[in-house]
Length: 257
Image (cartoon, rainbow, N blue to C red; front, side):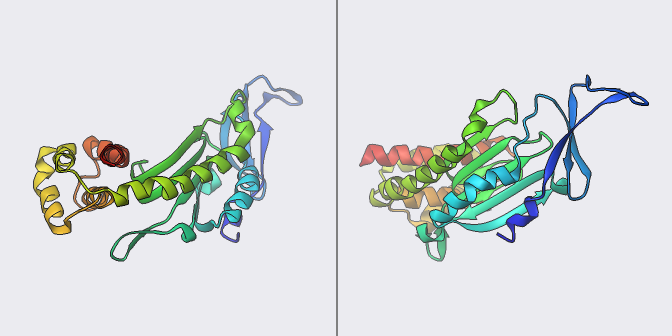
């Protein structure tokens, strides 16, 4: 909780008014989001912006995550507190994917006071989460909602977090065994090679020879290894593979079961 205190500062809305002397009016259609402990202005937003504080998010999220065995992994407060990124993992749900290589479920909650992001809740098991939003791993849920006074979805944050945790645990319980317990079909190894650009074929082939994958779980980990260690992180093709790899391999595993 001490880490979470960094993003628990109070904020308030102050109308952006204009006028001369005492003849002020509030017809600008804008408001300031002010950090109360420092009086710093975090942003100037339109009146359509709906303030969702980190305190509100954590009021719902913290008890549910704690009840399910979640531990705070990292908390970042950016741009003077205008944007916050909070990450929890679930160490009791650890799954071994290779020698000295484990995955645990994670939940990443992002919230901002400057409109750069809405309330975002990302859950799954990740090998890599890039600053540009690219993800290598398994995405269980990717909830995104804009801070809008018209967005009624923001009224039910608690149930979203509950559903997100349940879906993440379900993947570890039901989906991972499908990948781990089914042997690879040769035709799917060919299809796997075709997922990657032609110039990466030699690297992928060498990785397949070195790792000798036997199951679809092994095959998935060959892919994540290549993506995190050998692919150009600035190309669209890399990001496209990252976003589709798990679901593609899962589909092959289900078909072969």
